[in-house]
Each structure stands twice: as structure tokens, then as C-alpha cells.
Amino acid sequence: MHSPLLTMMRGNTHSFLALLLGGAVAFTGCGKDPETTATTTASATDDSTTTTTEGGVSDSSTSTSNGVTSNPTSGSDSDGVTGTTGDCSFLECQDQGGGGTVECDIWAQDCPMDQKCMPWADDGGSAWNATKCSDVDPDAALVGDECEGGGVSGVDNCELGSMCYYVDNETNLGVCVPFCIGTPDAPTCADLTDQCSISNDGVLILCRKTCDPLLQDCQGSSSCLNAAGSDKFVCIADASGEAGAAGDPCEYLNSCDPGLLCLNASVIPDCQASGCCSEFCDLSDPNKDDVCSLKDKGVTCEPYYDEMEDPPPGLEDLGACYQPM
Figure (tube, rainbow, N blue to C red):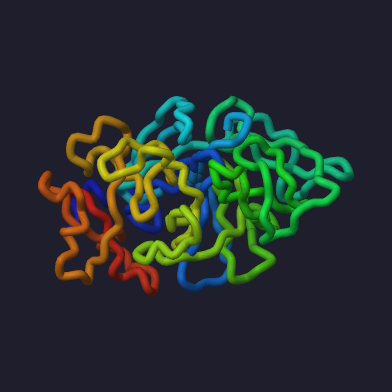
């Protein structure tokens, strides 16, 4: 049984762990924010009530949960660029993006000819919080192609309507990922098998591949995490850097190693930050508690979804390692 506090804190969120989606995503060296889930079609995501913040790390300077999330306002990337911290809702950490200068509309792509509207970090931080017009490379890479640049710089060599994402810190190479199309109220993706994920206060709008959080079947070092405003899981770029292990502090949605998620400090013993990393787990596994690194401190494999709500199809056995309240 979940504590009534869990339900109370999650409000009207679709899952008690998903509150962390109201946070930000960080970028670690090469922008990490993959999203992938086993099966699905592009579905609208409405971030009017929850905004996920992703963090990252770009060349120049460059990250949800459900009742047990945190809600940092600004965080750090893998290079150690830190910002201010907000709060963590019950199970996972959230981070508020946005707050920067909005020079153009990513949905409308209303920049002058030969330029594109791009998300970037105008505060020197590690999370996308603003938009600006950047030149389109005359020999631009197409969606799905390898690309250069990216991160939170807002500059890359991808075609109009896309950005370089899943960038590798060492090679500075990533993949061109398309922006969502439609409108904030009715978002979709050109590829209907993708999931539109709107995060960082609407600054980051990416069509990501869906994934299975228990299989963590994303390519590269991406993490399979809950998409903002949706019950889908998508591949998000890993922004954990050298940290991100169970028990490590976290601020952003993608601040933990693949297979882990950022949970509120209240459910992780001895957590000295607004949130700390912990593992996903399989409720159907008879030895499910063994995957929890902090089990000696009272952490067990508990349901990811609130007992008052039916989990989405295929995610009935999804759990997370935390200390029941």
C-alpha cells in the first residue's frame, strides 16, 4: 500500500512517480535526452501542468516522476555547471526549464530565411531555457543522420526543423532528431511511431523513440524515462556524467545513469540533496528487491504507479527502488 502522502503529493499527475516530469532535462556534453518505449504512436503531450527539464552539456557550455519526484529549478550538467535547486515532489525530481529569452517560435520556425529556431541555454547553464535563430548549414544533415555540435549551444549542422541530440561527449557527434509539429495544444510527430515530448517549459520539443524502462532498450548511453505530459517512456540523453549511481544526488530528469531515475530525497535514505538516484525494478521478479543497491537501508522494489490508477498496458510490473512511506 502506498502512503496517503504519496497520493496527496502527486496531485492529478498520471502516475505518482511521474511528477518528476515537471522538471528539467540536463545536457551532458552531448545533449542527453533519448526517449524510447516498446510500442506506440505519436501522442499529444500537454505540459501545461507539468514541465520536464532536461539538462545537457554543449560545446560552448554546455534532465519526472510520480509522487516521489523532486522539482529542481535549475541544475548541473556532467561538466559540473551548477544552478539553483528547486524542490522534489514525492518520488522523482523535476526541474523548471524556461525563463530565458524567447527570440523565436520553435513550432512556427519563424526565423529569417536560411535560419532555424533553436533551443539553447542563454544563462551559461546546462539546461535548455531559451530560443534563438541560428544559421542552417548549407550542407545540413538530415533527420536520422549523424551530426555535429548541439548540446545547449543552439548551433549544429542539422536541417531545418531538427536539432543535434544524443551527442557523445568525446566525439561531439550526435543524431539529428526532429522537432514536434502541430501546436503546443495539439502536438504530433511526422513519424507516428515517435512520441512528442515537450519539456523545459516548452523550449525543448522533440519527437523521440519510445522504449521499455525495464529493458532500457535505448541506443547508446540514453536512458528510458517517462516523457513529459505522457504515460509513454522515451529515450532521453544521459546527463549523469561521472555521477548518477544509486544514492548519488540528482537535479535533472536525466541526471542518473541509464536504468536509474531521480527520486525525491524523502524516499531515499541519507539523501543529502533535493533528489537522489535509484533503480527501476520489475515487480514480477521474485527477487525484485535484490536490484536495489540501498536495500540494506530499507529500500525495496515498490510500484512505480499509484495504487489508485491502472498502469498503462505493458507497464503493470514497473517498479522503482525506494523506501515506502
